[in-house]
Length: 132
Image 1: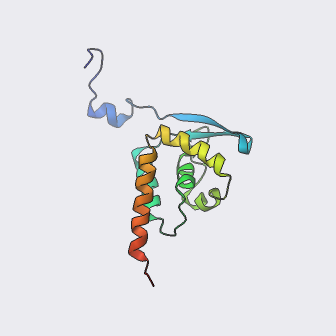
Image 2: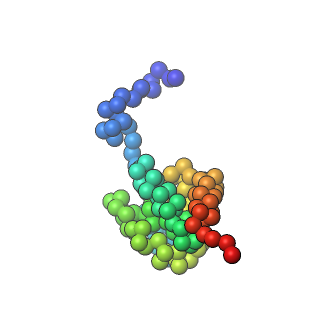
Image 3: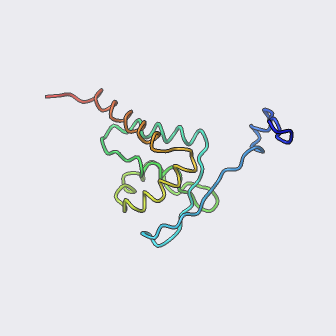
């Protein structure tokens, strides 16, 4: 460990002085404008994961759910709620994918995380469905 690297204390971590939430401005040409995409807190990530795992309707709205969870205004306040996910899913896929990719990067999510969400979703489908 480098001599100039500080070992963080409990107070450093809990006060937030050790971190800065990233917000990135993303150009979405399909919508002819910018959106802000936010790095989520651990709580927000958990809520996103629960929303995906709890979606048993078979809609497969991973991209729309992540966009809803991470698009914010210039002050960092979410623009969308979980209630907006189905409507967002009806927007251009290319636009959602642009935002989705940035959110994945900011939140250290990749193909593996998406695959896990989808696998968990698919496994849950088998529990509630019946075969003929």
